[in-house]
Length: 119
Image 1 (tube, rainbow, N blue to C red):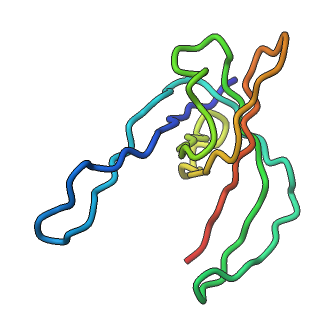
Image 2 (tube, one colour):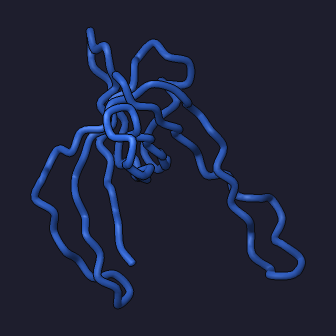
């Protein structure tokens, strides 16, 4: 694994902001370390969400099972993947973890993720 990623859990504030009356959300890192990002489905599909065109593509994020924080990674978390190891010009990719992964004798957690990009 030659890439680096940060997997974070969204934590909602206990009290709403006095100005906006909305709860703030902070992303707390659960895992930071090596990873491998693999596009599982190279055929992207276009969708429309809230009147905006978006492109969705299935993918997989692999992280070592024995790394600290790895066991805590699962559904509902957000991961930022830095793909700069082999492509210095690439920009970070943000993905949403859609499920966890547990398997006997696995050396990596293969987390299904959903990359969503758009305007």
